[in-house]
Image (cartoon, rainbow, N blue to C red; front, top):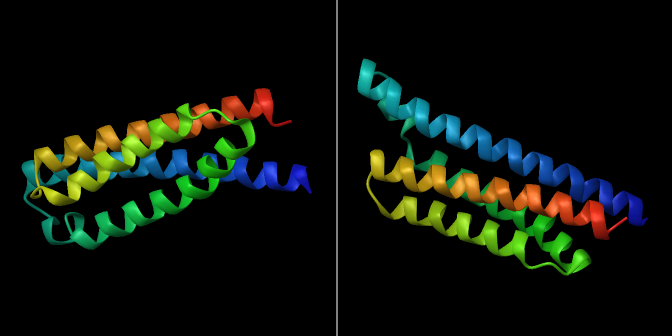
Length: 127
């Protein structure tokens, strides 16, 4: 049973890192495409995409990093990820544009770092 839980948490950390990377790519490409081509603004900058992305990030981080922190008793991955989620939430409060992209990219990098740290601590202490 423990190996199954570890496997699920391990996979969720990897999903969290992938989602963070996709979010960063989305933010950067949206700014570049809209600035250079003036196309796709209504689709790429749709606020629903950002709200759904934040919801997914919170859910994945809560399960993967939260359960990992309970298991390995190290607060660092949790604190780093929650700081990142705070940046992502703050990005929803500013208007679309460079400020939003910067806050979101900072946030997703921190969330991804939280997942990486969680995997490392679990490798050392959860086996």
